[in-house]
Length: 389
Image (cartoon, rainbow, N blue to C red; front, side, top):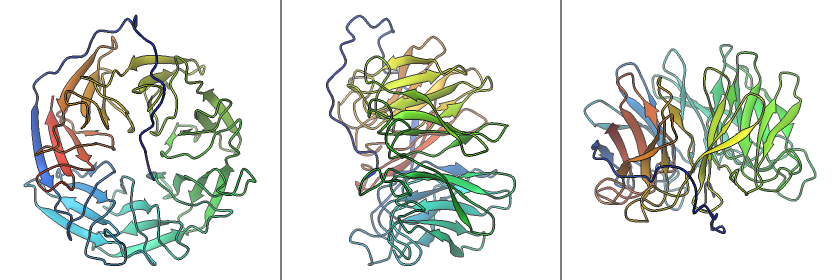
């Protein structure tokens, strides 16, 4: 369901003034290859890292539960030696199934996340995993009016309130599936719908999480809807008023953003779109003006960037593409410098390194990048990798 690749009319950009991409050798390490059994399968989410260097994440499938056809998914820990520990195996009811999003970790080490399915009403859950491995369902979605199918990770504030999006559901009359929500879950477990999308002009079907500025305003993307039904970038202020900062047209500005935003110190936003053609990287300034920073060409630079970005202290941007690359098929890790020159840091080959990275990257203090692939690896069930640029 999540982050499906789009087949769109290719954008004619024969005279596009950016430097042609090239492949640069990097230090790439597979930290773990999933086997598809109790350890999990098909990680579609990014990672979170603790101070000791341990990595935490989810897999959409696999695990020891037989309550889902291919397994209901797991929460896992990967230590600095590459040893994997399954912290929780989902069982569909009541704890949820199909975790598609990255985790958020509080100061005491508790983990919070979402499942896109399962729970008491099959519409997904918000869960907490404490430091002793006990999982508790903080909230089960009912579809309407509270939302359904949360595919994105959570944003946590200092008061332990959680903010996120649901792909569908809500209280609008925008159609039988409705168009999704932005929600808040307070520390007592009470959920509030902050906004129900109406498709036009505000957007529809948000697949990504949120970012928050110092004033408490929330920002995000919708994959569809907006003025041209090609997605939007929105702002939700502290009083619940929603503003569309940009509606994608599909012509020289991108289309169908499936990833969330990253914000720099000046308040500018950066993100990706999967269309038109092979996808784009864009910037939205504080005045709402959108600029395309890069248009992908499929090979060798990559195609269909479905994940968010990470920015280093120098302003360089790093991300993944789900397909494309030197083999046309398995995706890439890329760098975009401050002059918008793109470098392919790694082009996936399926075996043994992985294939189809759906999630974004995280960066440690030394500049190492960590991520996941949904497929490939030594057992064809996905990998966790490290890349040293």
